[in-house]
Length: 448
Ligand SMILES: NC(=O)c1ccc[n+]([C@@H]2O[C@H](COP(=O)([O-])OP(=O)(O)OC[C@H]3O[C@@H](n4cnc5c(N)ncnc54)[C@H](O)[C@@H]3O)[C@@H](O)[C@H]2O)c1
Image (cartoon, rainbow, N blue to C red):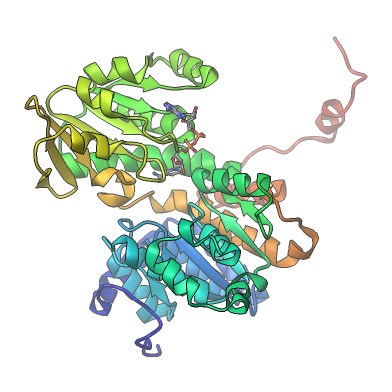
């Protein structure tokens, strides 16, 4: 192992690497699909010579993805996609064991977060790998000279560059991938505004991603985060889930499994109806606010829990978010109606006291609670997501020249291959269609 050079990373403490090694190895045990892909990548080197800048949650599972890309021949740089989600020991192990330049410190401020994004840009990527589209949007804002949209210190660095230098960041990019719902929404908006400058594969849209990651992964790990932060019993409590999409379905079912009475809020009539038919109480947030003990938003939307909702909440309410950005809970509104500063009553629990004396607890500063106070998704879930990332990167490397500046779904063959590898790893065998069945299912001639 080479010594990591001092200027090609920014992490908390290289001495924590040993713990990170153990975590990465532990996660790998539960990542058989990615392992099989890594073994093939090692032989075939499909990413040979490609510089990849990844902006992902810096966790043990991500480390296993980075190893896979590296084995595939890519020159990888990793930066955090959220200031609170970094596992500092994993960041240290990435630098120390795999020599992957890593820029991530748990709890970093916004200036540092964007300083790290800058490092990923300065890698001059051929391919971007985002989780929330912060890397790609920074790249485009810099290229377009839209400095007002950048974090101020990133903006002042970008302003100091010549036009030529600014355009260079984008010039070599052949394509990218995007991990999450919120990032895909932003990228589709870029495509609609005709500012998307290269093809991007929406990894989130793969069935083997959102079925597992958003539903089972967010479901379990969000409950884990809330419990670790509060150690409050869920059984018998009213647990309000805002949003009944993939994440919401998972969260609601796991909260019910813990014995909570689950209330769902929605804006989409179909999703709301589905929640009713799945046996949950469905009501407006204004109604739910009065009776909830726990609240968790998973909508990808802004101010879902707003000032008037805080006005209605019970003393002791516990409020968390597991959607991508920390905008789902209107914390500034809560601040305005509170006396003084919040008290950090436990790690990840800010307790606000309202002017009428109620205590309202905000977990993880309203950031993704499963990553803030827990460890994100279990490895077996990320195995599916990151298998999609690795195979989508390979697909992009082979096909970028044929793709337009659009957001693409993960090709069906990749989805099916990942499901097949997963079943194989689980030792599950399924039937195959007989010739007769194939004929029957593709024929219009057979009737009653
Ligand atoms: N915590 C994690 O680890 C994790 C994992 C995957 C996705 N995410 C994020 O979670 C969010 C949700 O993802 P998803 O895949 O479930 O998306 P989705 O589109 O499947 O579901 C979102 C749901 O929220 C509903 N919604 C929107 N505004 C609302 C409002 N004001 N009140 C109530 N409901 C509202 C929508 O109608 C939709 O049904 C996104 O931000 C995504 O990036 C987080």
